[in-house]
Length: 429
Image (tube, rainbow, N blue to C red; front, top):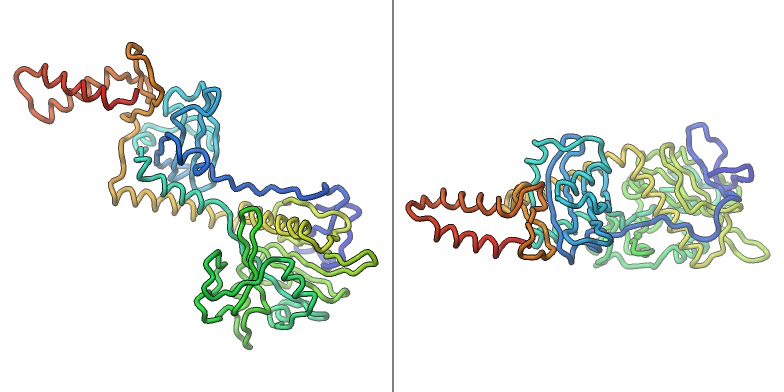
């Protein structure tokens, strides 16, 4: 976000390589504008209620999982959630589209593709045993949500602003230490049980003995702090960690030093947040500005003009929100990350399909599955939620199948009556 009032005091002004700079705008709304949303839909709306789970594959979107309620949410509508390689899609299915499960699935598909499911697609769909599979679905949902982040942190002493100088530096000023305390809590890595961010926690100190960690609105953040990591000449250890971070924070000491993001050669670093402590008559502030590589879309909260923030918890929350949203926007939109994310989602669903095959958890093919949970009057014609197949027709099919399998000859009336009684007792009314 740029405006005529933008000033650029922390970055070099060269924008020839397509980098976007956010240095403050007067149109920024006050306070924290937060677009973090990590509602675990399956966990919150499906896990503890009656619902259906189906797994299948379609040529365009690949393997997918769809879950939908069998009871109404409100006004006859039903919630549905669909997992596939592109994303997790949440759908509210209107009442008029909830008569059959085919209606529900078709409506969900209409939200992500213009194609209609073919007969071959329907034949590939399998219903899963909910009680056996709900934990697996919950795990997939958690893995598809962004809740853990690792941010690189480099310290730039006065006059040392080039990439090699940043990675080689092991010095830490008092202002930098104060900044780390503002970012989070200092934690010992040995035996650390929470999100590790790839750091070594076995007590070997390969990535240092300590780091900083924090949480924000349920999100876990581990910092990769350059000066905390051991350094040896020609040892790329620091760059191995920080060079793989999407977001890198540079705390700049020298007021005259300008950071040039193009000197950072890692293909994974996409967002650079430069912070400088500013001392004024009214108190101390952090000035922070952001630079994004091309293809990173804008993301809130947008920085005000001037981008000066008092050193307090409210400013810290805004800073964390900004960086978390920066990583989310990058992973969701930049091609190199988006393709990796799609591959990960597809792999998760295929792994579940393989698990189902191994454990024989498949319950039914779509056309034979009954899902109507609402009690009906005994004399009311009962209709399957699948298409227009009614219970009477299903009874006849069921009885004929058993008669054929058991080769029962002679008077079959008693056997038929027994089977029909069992069928009615087990049917969902």
